[in-house]
Image (cartoon, rainbow, N blue to C red):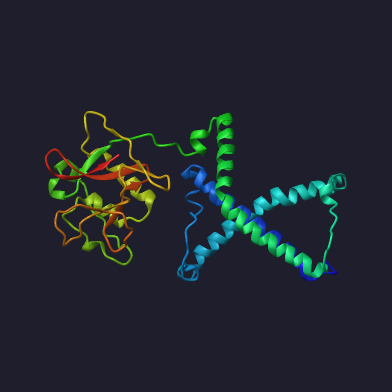
Length: 309
């Protein structure tokens, strides 16, 4: 370090960045591999950020503080387990002298002050490319390991998501309030929460109140709870009905190829359309809410209904 201060600092920087990249890719892959109830609410999915600086400035200091503390805990724990503890054991029991790995021999073709930074720079670029290309292989390795440990511990259903074989019909609810029965409308209220600065008073009062409530709620877990609490209001079929569904390119399984249902606004007619674009200005409701899948349809009486499976 005394003979090449820049090379020493660069070496520590590359080592730290490589460790952080490995941890970040591994944690993001583990989030996708493990059951959603484990990490999905704590770790955000990997999303493209075209305006990263703008997004950072829009978020509050409290949000940034929480993320920094969470990242610090994750990195500190992994650093202690994989770096500090092995190094401590090597020094305590003097194992390093028996391992050739800890007695490297360096060969310099040119000046070390030039060769070492150049090699570290090339290594850093190669590591970025390797992680980007083989990150899915890391996820596959994690999946095999969790599957192996889950089978031995009897926890496979708890730590890994289950593959959806088919959907079972829970029930149907009318799209418009006038088509609902008295039982379905009993004690049914509509929330007036603002969404993205748009008052819910502009929503279509002709809609069945549940759909307005789902549109006003942006938290997926609360949307799921809203559906669960209204299951008893649904019209159910006496004969169990099952559907295979459609698997999208991202592996998600839906009842149809549409990702959103567009509900009619207050000035619209009674036309129920479907759209796959995530247009925030439209009354879009996801066709996937937790374990439930939504699909438009027509009842035997000719009423517009939404099937929930």
